[in-house]
Length: 283
Length: 125
Image 1: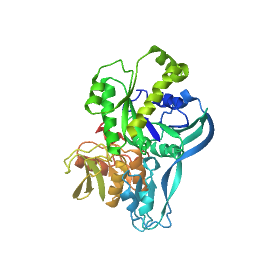
Image 2 (image 1 turned 180 degrees about the vertical axis):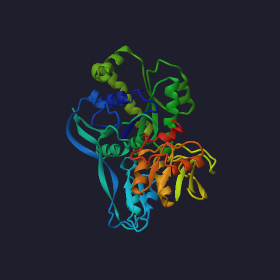
Image 3 (image 1 turned 180 degrees about the horizontal axis):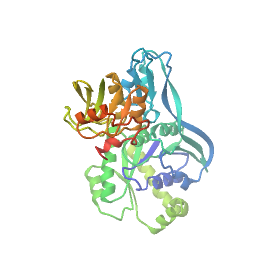
Image 4 (image 1 turned 120 degrees about the horizontal axis):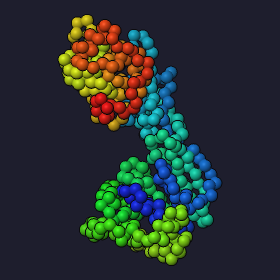
């Protein structure tokens, strides 16, 4: 069972929900796929045992085989290759703009001369270890890099299907989110009952609809804001899995980097209930 | 000799477009006869790499000189690889820019004059 925790809006409490859910269950693997700003390790304090470099495949052109037909530049939707055919008896040349490359592999697959091979460009790191019984994996994208999905996919290569896998996804609704939640059995959308939370929740719901991933909503700081989020969920027949009230004690535990179920074990049962509701909904 | 001037419109009386990669038109003009061809730029709406695409388009026209307002890093690198000289700082009409080029009033640049994505904000940004 793979459960991803996502949200449209940032700062709604994805990591809080993901971490506390992980700490409330047995036989768990935790993947932090928010590789631009991973922070679940602050709560979980894992012991990192393995570090692997994360790569994106980028093209390398063998100039001795290339006839400068320009097919690779034509098929690259990201304009990462320039081919300049030879002129006036001079040899042609190729330029590769690696920072624009998304690593799709179209150029190498479609080169009629077989002149392109893919080489790895390092863009981040994947670290794995454990915190108590929880298996822990997270990715870190290097500063200055724009393509996080390859790092996210390399984090997800560690998925252990014998465990309950909890994925902490990045905020938003674009490629990194899709790369993170794809293949999940269920997605928990964390929101807050504010106009901003609702606005972005609606966008995230649309994304999950397109991906055909079943989902439910957790409303964090549920007693603040307005009741429009509840109204929206009711109207759209979206299951509200859990409501986390705004409490000073929860905020204080968070402010010290402590998971709330560690400081207040009585909350554990609420996260177990959350899990049971997910299982029920899956049936 | 034929040169390429980036332009906001399709005639010699149009103003020079200060952007290269996302200019409205490329005007390929013969500096002696003022005969010209204008090419609408297909790369204006490109998500990224507009300069690279535009540079390849210009290179395919077998011209050796580009006159424009500013040039970004990827376009500059591509034009350089194609052996095309880049002259920046042009403004006014295309015809005026051609005359100034002929008088040697522009300097060929050896580095890009603006950063990546400069053209995406629109002109003069």
